[in-house]
Length: 557
Image 1 (cartoon, rainbow, N blue to C red):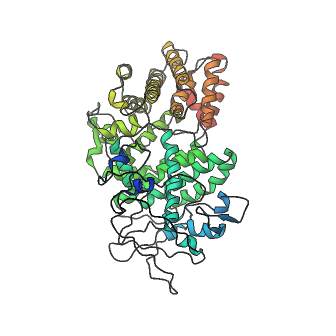
Image 2 (cartoon, rainbow, N blue to C red):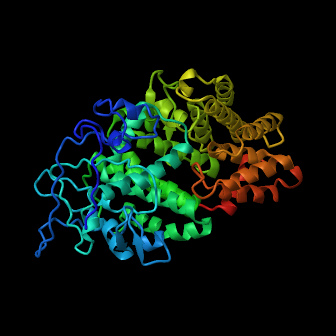
Image 3 (cartoon, rainbow, N blue to C red):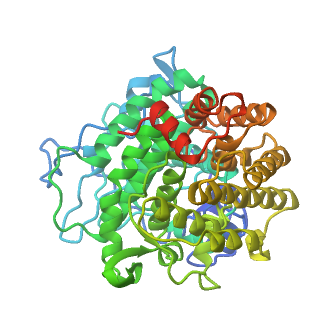
């Protein structure tokens, strides 16, 4: 017989969905309650359930006429239930109702074709109902996704084979979204610094879009699999999901839409950027960089719509992308692409995919998004990003640069009180150490990349010593993944065996879901090849020799 749930205390129509699930007193602020916003990212306000839920359509004998969206592969956003719980064909559901694994898998993991059924009428939207039904029963977190649905959404018919107890249990289905995404959010937040309230609000809005939920769910399943299995087994389990999602995002067999909406392009860019992370975890750096190159067209499409993002370079009349404009933009996906592109160019030794210009730097004070997305979340000072970009441009023979100006900018940078708002003392120390390591990594890149000095230069060795010392300050914590790039740059010039041992151990620990932007062991192999080659017996090497070693050990096709 159906499972009955006791109603939670308090007025149902007034509290936000998150406070209701947590059984906390809600201040009823709109559009998001202040209690959730003050949680510093631990809880996401899901809004208010003011509108009645649409009725679920009963299965019909004749299939309803819907405009089928073609070109999508038979991707499943979820995973097989028996994969999540191996060893048995029958399991007990979350609230104790016995159901078969096959029934739950069919119920919780619909294919993409089911996710993309349009509603009736000209103003119909794609339903998110199927997404909320695709979660597994193996996590223990509270919900974090919205339950509110648009009036014109088409609810998909439920499979007739599902036992009535499960079919009637709407609250159980909603819990799965909360359980798995809540765990994923907590794991991701632990590896990054706290974002500001404007950024949290923006992410809350984006989380309500079906396309965003697709790759968030994929990331959640990858994190969950790696946390419960050995890395080799987890890679085998996740490789199929990532491959199918790659085919889904890139749509190789689908003719391109000549007139895509801005939101469609944004969602595709976000999907490819998330794919970069997923492929870094499962397949490695080379596969991830391939996806980043695929994202270039979506990025250029978005920036071409706004002349604010372009700047004319010199007398030749060529247009470049304004780095300050992108980094201070509310379009977070643009900043994510630029940041990833600049970092890949640094560690891989390749030109940036797009050409950036730092004209009008320094950035206008008072911009929340500039410090939040890069400097706030990742702990990378904006000044260092600009310096690194200038070195990229010089090495690609695109622009002359005064290396002394870059050096002065790096040395004169100081942290501000704004960088550490709402942080505890320990996190504040970690942020200061990570930012200082970026200063010295940038200086090494300036000296070796522009000045042409080798690793035995006294200025380079002083910065290597400082980076290694700062790595010891952070130790083996969740936030040490932010040393990924600094460790690689310091490793290029490291001559002391003690320094090399620490750097290699740290890089090899950045694997699985414990990584920042790149899989550490990929670059550990590159450095070991360099040390046993050109840098053997503490011989001095230049930056170009590192790039040659990377091309040999980690080729990019």
